[in-house]
Structure formats: C-alpha cells, structure tokens
Amino acid sequence: MAVVEQISPRGAWEILQSDPDSVLLDVRSRVEFDYVGHPIGAVNVPWQEAPDWRIDPDFVDKVRAHLARLRGARAPERTVTILAMCRSGRRSDAAAAALADAGFQKVYNID
Image (tube, rainbow, N blue to C red):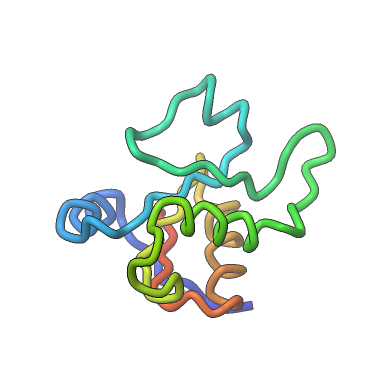
C-alpha cells in the first residue's frame, strides 16, 4: 500500500484555491455526508458504508467515474490533485493510498 502525503486543512484549502481542477474527495458514508454536513463542492465516494462497514471493492472505479463526470476530457485523471477527507483521517488515508496504488499521482490525505 502506498504512503500518502499528509496535508493540513489549511494546506488543502490553499490547493483548492490555487488549482481549480483539484478535487475535494469526502470518503465518509453517505449518511455522514448528507446529515452531518460537508464542504461546498466536495465529492462523496464512500470508502465504507453501513451496516457492514466493509471497504467498497469498487471504490477506485467509482472515483474514476466521478472524475469523468466532473472533468470531461480535461487532463488525465492520474494527474488530478485529489484531497481526501473524512472525520478522523483514517478512512481517507486508506482511501488515498488505494488511489495512489491505482496510479493516481497527486493524492493527499487531509489530517
């Protein structure tokens, strides 16, 4: 499993402001995303879902599908900056590592 660079919330905000193609990826469950709240513009692709909390084996493919909808024919997905987030940083770190293992080159975990 790849080691993913950790970034502070402030550092993530700076990337989001300076790189309009960057993606804020919220990997919390759909319930957390909808009912707890989420940052404006965040894309939700859950790493795990209730009730069994198993890791979604299609997670990377679902991220690719979201990127295709968001980006159209722009730069290749592997060069898109992805900033992964969750409540504690544990799920997002694992999800970011899975994306890095799948060939994404600019993946950060928001600590």
